[in-house]
Amino acid sequence: MIDMLIIVALAALGALFAGLLGAPAVTLLRGRSVVLSMFAVAALAVVAMAAGTVAVALEMFLSGHDFRVVLIVVAVAGAFSLGAALLFGRRIAAGSRDLARAATTVGGEPGFTAPADPPTSELAALAAALETAGSRLRAAQDRERSLDTSRRELIAWISHDLRTPLAGLRAMAEALEDGVVSDPGRFHTRIRVEVDRLSGMVDDLFELSRIQARSLELALTRVSIYDLVDDALATARPLADERGVRLVDGGVAAFPVRVDPQAITRVLGNLLVNAIRATPADGTVAVSTRVEDDQVVLGVEDGCGGIAEQDLPRVFDTGWRGGQARTPPSLTAADSGPAADSGTAAEQAAGHGTHASAAPGQRHGDSGAGLGLAIVRGIVEAHTGHATVRNTAVGCRFEILLPTTGPS
Image (tube, one colour):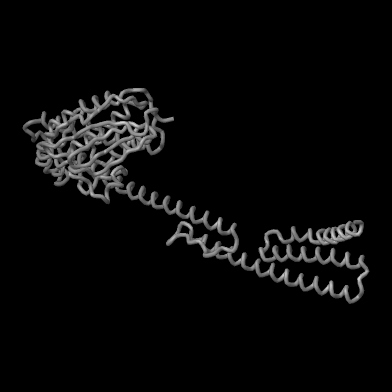
């Protein structure tokens, strides 16, 4: 028993001696190649094993032949150990270099591709994390490009939609100044309608800027969805009557919701106005509600004939207006012609005024700038809800999903 304790003590002393000698290598190899680090670890282990073995061999008073045999065994084992450490270190270093080269493609084209068969599980986990980060970055870049495209389209459309009524207003104002009109009252009425439309566009832009800046403040109140729908239908009915569209109750129940009544009324107004404008005469716009998974689902279904499938994901994007320009035809003539012809242009602008006039209180979403549905989505998401659209047999069905408890 004492002999075994002596052997253990000698082996420990030899290993301790080797460890003290190798301690400075930890500082010297910091920041160096993984090959050198693994080789140094293997060398330290070999030296510690050799020192302990030699110390024990001397204590055992081995013969010269036996002592040489022990030294040869230690030397050969140490050489193979160092060679294996060098080989494995080079493999790990090569895998690290491959991963570093692959990491430079994160966010680029065609995207990050993890190296095949990483030498260690840590490198494999790092490659998987980089692949996930690359996917998220590509998705973020796609969203950024989409937003940038929408922003450019919005600026172009807003510029056009502002220039057209302003040109008409200028033509009518010049005609009134020159006294070349026979019915000034009609011009004054048309000017007021166009000013109201411009004010609606400005209001929509301001509301959208608040939504995108996340500065929209909600005054939450527990109300019945039936009351909100009833108010929105009453407000939209004059526009529906003017266009010959029937507004019907497709099943609206008195479900309680905790929302900002004014904001949700605006959402319903935008949806109803868009549905009425897109539905041909003698068509029907139906409103319905239901409860689904602790959410109130409010649907507005129109008879527009449907939206192209490739356009459905963009319906709620800022500035989206589909394939048809929605600039009211009443002012297209006023956008051309010199100032000297202001009387003719003004007569054309004022003569078609009835086609572009909106029902009282229906300025929201009626600017034609593609902001109404973007505002719908922004307000609904501010309530921690969700807005969707899908095609039906005769048109489209817009749905907003609102939690019954309201946003936190």
